[in-house]
Length: 440
Image 1 (cartoon, one colour):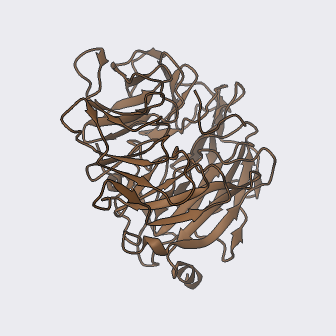
Image 2: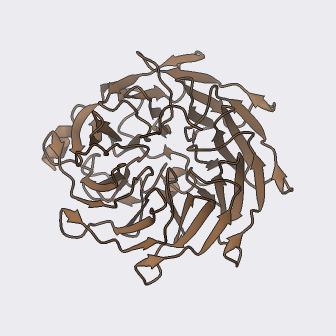
């Protein structure tokens, strides 16, 4: 494995689907789905309807159960954050194994998957679920975008997808689904597919948004515009409906000054936020462009050594991990200057490592992983000082925690790898959460 610590709109409540199946909230409360990376097509990473866990009780979170994947010397969970939909949690590993676990556990400390499917090529991205179909990409020249039945195949081991794309190397770009279209980044740009497939086993893309480099991060969609960062150091804005031809030119391009890798754009309040790697910047662009073909950022936040973390946006703040082993927090409106410093920073207790995992926000708490095996929670409002310590931490058995935590229905889900060989789905809850599950 070569990926290491260094290498070269609408509110969430409007799009998080409500449901009434079993999960981690009180039995009489409607539950919330987290159907794709950072929750919704705008990638804000904000669960605006969480109420069970907040700053007053987050420090009491404790492990509820673990989902145990298939042990293999190639099985590492790398950036594949869980999607939680209709009582099922989905993610993949670098051995190409895709998993579906019951989101409410199995009544025991360790749980087997409901079903799994071996897609052969490595999975470095987060799945997306829409209308009973789950979409996930695999890497290498033999990779593809796969569409699988979200309910499985009636067997613990599934073998046949609903459809798959023509060969496409999808690495860290998580599929984004909106309005019947699946968008995903890969070599040479961002690709759009009909979410319903094409009536055949193998489907070509509807169109390609051509970029000057590869698209490794997940594209975001807001107000009819598709945003994608590229390894050529530019943010591309395309019409989300395509251009009437197979190859589409961008509406405009934003210059970041350094390559974009895993930092996916987030769109909120008419602004697109995206990290650039080598210069350690959080770039803020006007979502409508600047009236020219090439646009400069409205402002850029100084996030330190490098940025490979996707930003989360909530309540006027932008949260992003940095190569300086810190959570950096910026005013979403900027600072009135071209270069802005964080309003506060968060750090974890103990050994320090880079923060490449995308943070997410729920009920006044920011959750984020660190490349030292830790997952932590911070008060989203800070601590009244510039440097803030985590309110809660848990040490996993994975030396690299770079997937995004997901807090829904009072349960915190996190993917990882047990000692580098067994994929794990961690589920954390309040002390009485296990009793509530048993009663249901």
